[in-house]
Image (cartoon, rainbow, N blue to C red):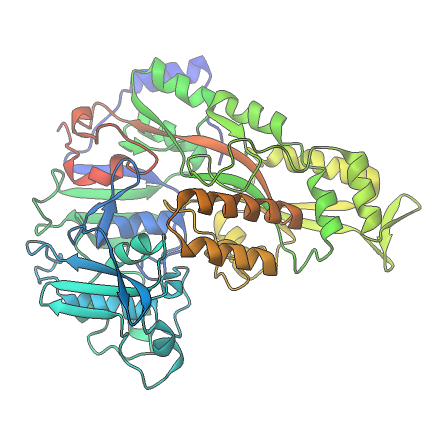
Length: 541
């Protein structure tokens, strides 16, 4: 992320230019796409935003993060005892009026198809629906001749029922969050263990959402209103998501090139929005920024702990965000009930303490250099500062580099674009990296911290952590889950694989000359922003 800083002179020019318009097309600023616009395989937040315009799920969330009707009606799950064992049954009656953007009817076969893709033994996307204890899921994934998932059945032509073993607090979101897509479009002849046809549609999504995907070219994704969208088509017939450099997002809105932007949440940008009488919203971000360490590359825990003692977080966060962000002490968003309210710092900035940890890791100071096994300590860190190091964590790395050099080590800072950053992250080729997590409503930790988690970029392997993460999935009692998660977060800090840095607010700014502000979603929250009612946004011309 980059800050936008305007001088009064430049600001005056923008005002004199006015906030021009573009009729019947809503233009939203985005950051760089990876071009994987698949509900099954999209991994970046920006690609996922494209999918969200086109594809809906069985259920949605309300402003408080509770499940409500989506393509299906929300019915609270029911616990039963079958053959002496507890199971939980989820029933999803489809809303009959909802259709795909080609006019075809949504069927239970489409829903079962989505489940089969997400649970396929060859599925290599980021979703972890297959970890939900659906009855028969292991047989489906491990037995080549098993073509159905026993716990997923069609009750009738418009109702699907899913049964899981025991209880799982994340299940309502894993199951209710299933993407609703047309089987006939993605793979009419689907066969288990062959997702090639599904992947062939990665660039061209289709679903029941408010907009239809048209094309992606020149860093712009174009959409048309879905005429079959229920209960009525979007108020604005066309929409675009356009890549704009973060530092230029607010500029683009003031020049009339975009209508909705999410600039860096800096005090300067908020002040500019106020001064220009722009409509803006500040919403707590459902996520947080962090510095990660790969335990397979930086193998000694004392070395990792020493590196964390060189991270001076508070001055960087305060300078960059002022009161729009705060330092956090555990790797969890403060918007979640899983964040310990009394969390204290685990590693404070202390170069002397860092030197002690390096010594424990076996490093000796030889002629002013930290040496182990004949090699000088050298760490490479990746940061997505778009080549300018204009990023809230950049000052932390800069000071860290200086302090490590004083001790005899080397920190190589690689400032690159997001695609390179995440490509190398996926292959595990960073020693350290800077990124942010977009949290889920339920703070299930399996995907990120379990030894088998598909997004365990830290390569952390801890049997106690694995056990706690799995135990926390087996109760609906929030207090019990809190107790387990608080301990799990401490273990992550003990392993020194993730340094939490900041919890910030999101800033959304709207062009009032192009958008009817009263048509925006009311009372936004971390779980429900303007995009939750994108279909209701009206243009002024």
